[in-house]
Structures are given as structure tokens and as C-alpha cells.
Image (cartoon, rainbow, N blue to C red):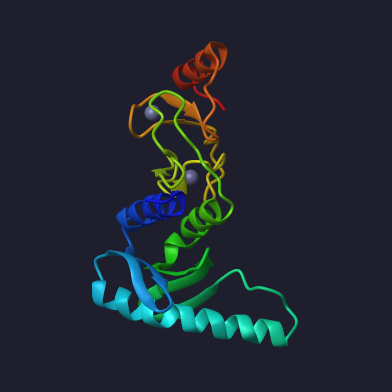
Length: 190
Ligand SMILES: [Zn+2]
Ligand SMILES: [Zn+2]
């Protein structure tokens, strides 16, 4: 596996695990390259049209002198969305429920900006891992310092693999930071 494939594979695996995501598909020249999700038939169909749609939108943007479009979003009934974007030479399409929009866009951001987050203790890849906000329950990407929905402080989180408390950007907290965190936990306040 090349590093591009490994990264894409981690993205596809994690995103397709999210409740409310119907499928994730990456296609090359209109053919499915990597597909995962419950709605397989839809994924293959999306795969076939994603590259050509992205190409058309790119041409349109070029004609209008607007540069390269970041993505293409299709709004479907029952508040489903299909988001398509280009990654390397692949066209990626994700079908998801509307309330997941923010977290899906952050995950795409991590993929496209080549961000990598690793647990400093167990070394597992946390780049595309999502966690529930303890105050409101909204799903956030691991490297979000603040809940996008309620604004809660999410700088310190537990690694989902080893359970250790770490910073959102993969740094190890100091003994002092952990002490303050535990005291706040016991006595409340923020
Ligand atoms: Zn929240
Ligand atoms: Zn860990």
C-alpha cells in the first residue's frame, strides 16, 4: 500500500463507521476504487458520476474565472447530502445525514490538508477519529479544540484506543496540566 492509499483507507474506514453515513466511495476515472458503507448500490452509482460531475464543475469554475472549486454538495430529500471532492487523482463521494455536515467537512479538511494526529502513548492514528462531546453529544473530530456545536472545551480528550488523556493535537499533557484537569473535574468550573 502506498502512503496515499493508507491515508485514504484510514479516512474511508473511519468515516463509514459514523452512524448516519450511508457510504464513502473513492473513484478513479469513473470506476470504484475504494468503497465502504451500507448503501453499496448507491455508492457505485455515485462513483460513476462523481468524477464527471467534478470535471464539469471545474470547467464551469474555469469559464467563470473562479479557480478550483473545493467541493460539490448535492442536497437530497430526507436531509441527506452527497458531498464530492477531489483528492489526488481520485473523486470522493460521501452520502450522509445533514446533521453530520460539520464533522464530515472537518474530516475532509484533515484529509486534504495532510494533517496527521497520533496518540503519543499508543501511537495509533487519530487523524480521522471522531468523539462525542461530553456536554452536548455532538460528534467532533479528535483534533477539534472546541465543540463546534456547544463550544465546550475539548482540548483534552481520552485516546479511544488506550484511554490516556491527551491534547487534541496529539501532544502529551504535562503532569501539572493533568492535575489541574482532575481538580476541575472534581470541583467543577471551567
Ligand atoms: Zn458540545
Ligand atoms: Zn492511545
